[in-house]
Image (cartoon, rainbow, N blue to C red; front, side, top):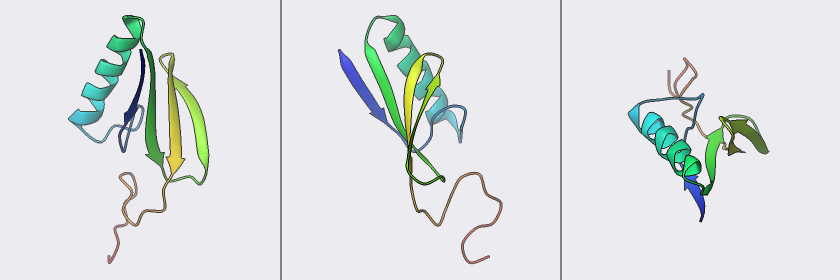
Length: 76
Protein backbone atom coordinates (compact mmCIF):
# COMPACT_ATOMS: atom_id res chain seq x y z
CA UNK A 1 0.00 0.00 0.00
CA UNK A 2 1.22 3.55 -0.73
CA UNK A 3 0.93 5.83 2.30
CA UNK A 4 1.76 9.54 2.64
CA UNK A 5 1.99 11.04 6.13
CA UNK A 6 1.68 14.82 6.49
CA UNK A 7 3.10 16.51 9.57
CA UNK A 8 4.68 19.86 10.36
CA UNK A 9 7.99 18.23 11.35
CA UNK A 10 9.85 14.99 10.72
CA UNK A 11 13.24 13.68 11.82
CA UNK A 12 15.82 15.00 12.31
CA UNK A 13 13.61 18.03 13.10
CA UNK A 14 11.94 16.81 16.28
CA UNK A 15 9.70 19.19 18.22
CA UNK A 16 8.15 16.65 20.57
CA UNK A 17 6.56 13.26 20.99
CA UNK A 18 4.38 13.43 17.88
CA UNK A 19 7.42 13.40 15.61
CA UNK A 20 8.95 10.46 17.45
CA UNK A 21 5.74 8.41 17.21
CA UNK A 22 5.36 9.36 13.55
CA UNK A 23 8.90 8.23 12.76
CA UNK A 24 8.38 4.89 14.53
CA UNK A 25 5.06 4.36 12.72
CA UNK A 26 6.47 5.25 9.30
CA UNK A 27 9.54 3.04 9.69
CA UNK A 28 7.44 0.18 11.07
CA UNK A 29 5.05 0.28 8.12
CA UNK A 30 7.96 0.41 5.72
CA UNK A 31 9.50 -2.66 7.34
CA UNK A 32 6.20 -4.45 6.73
CA UNK A 33 6.52 -3.80 3.01
CA UNK A 34 4.43 -0.66 2.54
CA UNK A 35 5.60 2.23 0.35
CA UNK A 36 5.72 5.14 2.80
CA UNK A 37 6.62 8.82 2.38
CA UNK A 38 6.38 11.90 4.58
CA UNK A 39 5.51 15.49 3.70
CA UNK A 40 6.81 17.98 6.27
CA UNK A 41 7.53 21.70 6.38
CA UNK A 42 10.82 23.56 6.29
CA UNK A 43 11.89 27.17 6.60
CA UNK A 44 13.74 26.95 3.27
CA UNK A 45 11.88 27.91 0.07
CA UNK A 46 10.80 25.33 -2.48
CA UNK A 47 10.39 21.58 -2.21
CA UNK A 48 13.29 19.37 -1.12
CA UNK A 49 13.51 15.60 -1.17
CA UNK A 50 15.58 13.83 1.46
CA UNK A 51 15.88 10.29 2.70
CA UNK A 52 15.80 9.49 6.42
CA UNK A 53 16.37 5.83 7.32
CA UNK A 54 15.34 4.80 3.78
CA UNK A 55 12.09 6.83 4.03
CA UNK A 56 11.39 9.50 1.39
CA UNK A 57 10.84 12.83 3.12
CA UNK A 58 9.50 15.75 1.12
CA UNK A 59 10.00 19.11 2.80
CA UNK A 60 7.89 22.01 1.55
CA UNK A 61 8.96 25.58 2.20
CA UNK A 62 6.44 27.42 4.31
CA UNK A 63 6.35 31.17 4.87
CA UNK A 64 5.52 31.11 8.55
CA UNK A 65 6.00 33.75 11.22
CA UNK A 66 6.58 31.02 13.77
CA UNK A 67 9.27 28.47 13.07
CA UNK A 68 10.11 25.85 15.68
CA UNK A 69 13.87 26.25 15.68
CA UNK A 70 14.50 29.98 15.78
CA UNK A 71 15.08 31.89 18.99
CA UNK A 72 13.29 35.06 17.90
CA UNK A 73 9.50 34.99 18.05
CA UNK A 74 7.11 37.39 16.30
CA UNK A 75 6.49 40.56 18.29
CA UNK A 76 9.62 40.17 20.41
